[in-house]
Length: 311
Image (tube, rainbow, N blue to C red; front, top):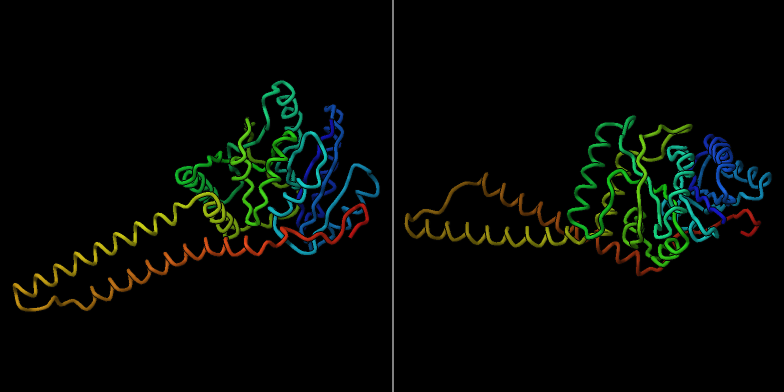
């Protein structure tokens, strides 16, 4: 069997040699021949030069280089399309996905013919900022309540899949991608290995809090229409409340002969309703924007260079 190792890279010149050495160190423990597929996602450092060097010295190494930064989701999809192995794994180059876990993952798949995928999940978030860890836990609680697709808290993209599952994922050709949700949506029997959080071996993460927050919003919009339902219910309740208050004003005027005073309270109500309307329009706009991007039918990524020498 061939094991395809898909590795998205963005400004990872320092981590690349260390990742390659760590993977080569565990290969003797496996019966599978490795096929490395590195995807350079528009890096601005020497990542591409390092990949060229690795490809020149090892025929198992191939790489794809995007014309610009298209994002990790596009890099994952490109790697899956390029993979030829009967088994396929997705890994981060910073070694936060421990390579030694691959040995146990392969053993589990070989021991259970009905098992389609072995994933990994972090049971601790040591080293992460507390606010990021808090919002990550809240995201999983929220998405599992409002979506029919259940996602495992702490699950990583690092997983080992059989070819059948990979082919199913490739059939999901949507432009707006959220891989964690897609992995769950396609189904297939999956088991998870638990491990403690591992710090980056080199370099700095390209993800900040707001990027992760935006990414979580993408997941919610891609796999749930609950925000639309919330906007509808909120709008209906606001209308009922407005009619009720209007009735109170009319009755009070007829009975007591003076209209209800209260300029500050009126302004507060107007601001509240205006803000709620803008929020609702924003939710609608997010979904319409997704539809707009899908109807453009643009390619998910553009390759400028690949290791076979084809541009």
